[in-house]
Image 1 (cartoon, rainbow, N blue to C red):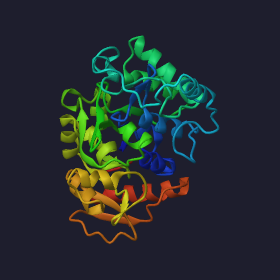
Image 2 (tube, rainbow, N blue to C red):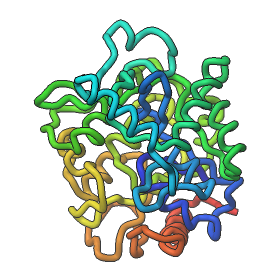
Image 3 (cartoon, rainbow, N blue to C red):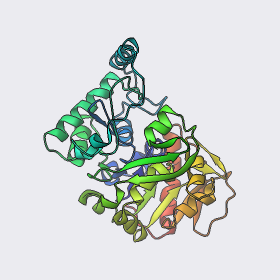
Image 4 (tube, rainbow, N blue to C red):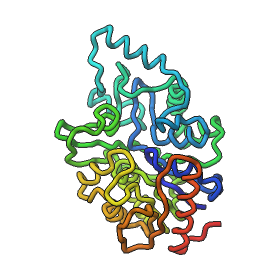
Length: 334
């Protein structure tokens, strides 16, 4: 068994071509939940859903968000209603009291549904309605995710990092913002002072995640700060990574990032915006997969290939390099 850590789009792109290299049933994916938000009473789990939709063959691969071909009539109508009523489009946080009451899994990330600042497709919304309903019926987020995976025909185990709430809060020159407000609404424009993983000190990985982390681990080319950071902020996850073989795929080519705000966030948290900075942020990584054009020299085993991801063939190529890198650190993969 080999376990993948996923956040954003990097790891789902890697897994798109993984089936020719790794058995889906033996490659669970642990997903970041620090990006989750509750909006209009619905719990939205962006990183979990990107994996579910990708593995279920319905992901919009142009945006790597939501369901391909989805309509957005409800989202449009919500925006029109707010505009007609003269309501501030937000994002509109619920009150401080509301952030720590109600559905426990949604703490510290609760937004009003007025003029939704995140675009939710209609079929996408059906997933959030079902997830929220199952949570309200007493299911855990892990149980709920397994139910959704079965409904979508997903063979690869998809595991939320925790059933406890953790929220990634970006502290900026304009005040603290949930990561979704910072990235989706503000497009990472504000200056960043620091990043907080609110609730991580009281959160625990689930038993399923603990079991998965007993196996060799692959960290995909995800954002080290906001995709992997919330997981590693839990002491038990970091300890697990320190005691098992770990291979990481750099999201950089030298100091060039493939996509997203990883560079800005790495610098804000004290690391260089480069492959070298990623390696410093991942002291528990035993080996790396780097791009052939990346001349960064690391003090750990390195396998190089073309790491650009945009097709199943790309994913398979990089996964073969990952498998090779696992071998350099003595991880046996059947």
